Length: 416
Image 1 (cartoon, rainbow, N blue to C red):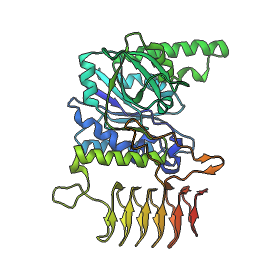
Image 2: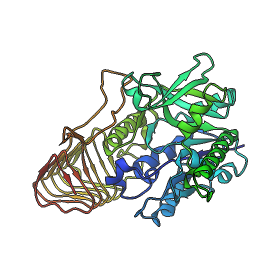
Image 3: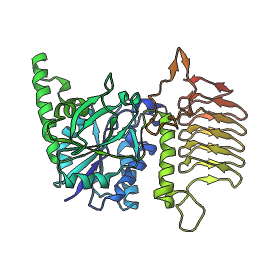
Image 4: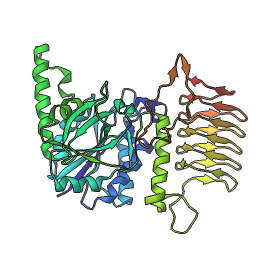
């Protein structure tokens, strides 16, 4: 029997819109590649589906192409199968609604179980451990959980568990008061039986809609909120269990959190897969970027395919997406440089990191707000795709929307 992973639940990525520019979130480079690699630890055959919602104005034609590219990369990693594909929602259905809508594709081939990975989370994805826990104690729903401090737990789904059996006794999504320090990671392992409660919610939504809409065409019938409509209702009935992890985990709700997630992944790879990190050595990974010998990179730098880094460049705590160019002697710190952007000679692009409290091991990234008291908060600098930064200017704590060509320095601004 195979276990199938559904890398779904992408949505429109509002917090990342400056970068993903209309793509479904889980097809962006920095959310896709890490989830792909998470399946390496599973020996069973896999069929991977990606489910997401088409956004108005998005580049629809790129969806199948990007999924094909992802499938090709999975083949290189010896993961996946020819059945890997992208399933697109044309109306927002919610996580549960998407699973129920594509239930026939999910159950094709008779899988023993299937994973559901939200695209907006960073984790070491302990899928093998979850699969072992499921086989030891099979139940319809298995959630991955971690711990948070009392204050930040209010920003997540909170789980009250039986410490002996790990059954979920109570579940509340983003409570107003403290419920539990165990939070939902957004990573699940479901049995085929898990689709039955989704069917019940769908039928109940249909009935409720018909009471309000005599035409019987109520559009909300297919929308199923997995956490509120299913987990909260079934908690304490012996159907939902939690598997706790002490590994890395963070939400990716904004471009700033994507930079923090990149740091976590680079540190994780240093421990578990150092062969995947760039190094000038025989047998090392194929480097598709052009980096001048005098450039200084690191720590915590990720560079995409086709990037050009000129002589004397200083690059630190940053992500440079594919096709970007950093000309000679530029300095880029705490910044995400979008696809195809150019930073001119002797320019300085710098942001301010917003990391979790290093003195609290249970601290996570706070839900970032761009403004406070009417002022733009200092944060990392973000350059959207195909931005042009001229030579000898300073861009500090700013967000530059795609396709902008600047002519002077900017600090603490959003450039529309």
